[in-house]
Length: 253
Image (cartoon, rainbow, N blue to C red; front, top):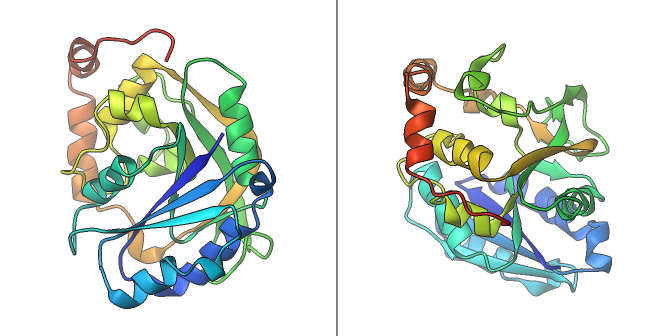
């Protein structure tokens, strides 16, 4: 089975070489092809030349450069990536994430192990060094994503949503498109509606093994006023009921 890795990019050139090395090192390339969907929200001829340079990639890595609207929202960029994905599954990674060499292999194995899986959350190291490889990461801790079952679970014991579900996630392409894809209105990391719909319509599981590392970028901290607003919205009465009513569950996906 071929796999896509979807990455949203905005003026983060320093992270690109190590991310390419991370993709090229995947053990999964021995059995399948990896498409790297690179969504550039700060389009440039120079970056396009790098991403489309086949000499930089393993023979089973196919880079796909997607030029997107400069300064587009995070949600619009992720949606563009999914719209350009033709494989059964895709792995959502930030450009400053680092996959272990066996990361893709583990995520795909977990996905194929159960019927009806919508998402696989990958366990990950937290790194405080922007230049560290996965192997060299100065580990803060192992992040163990919590499995969400109700809207209230989104905020139990956590200060922001993306800490709760992780950063390196494999999604069923069919299921994400079925529940409506990422919202173009999404300004920050987490799409509440889409994730909760995935929970309603499919299984969400997590890996036992660590699949990569995530750089804790001090410039990427969640905006607290926006977070408070979203918390109030998610906890509103009938929020989950309204989502259920808007989604016809598809059996056997």
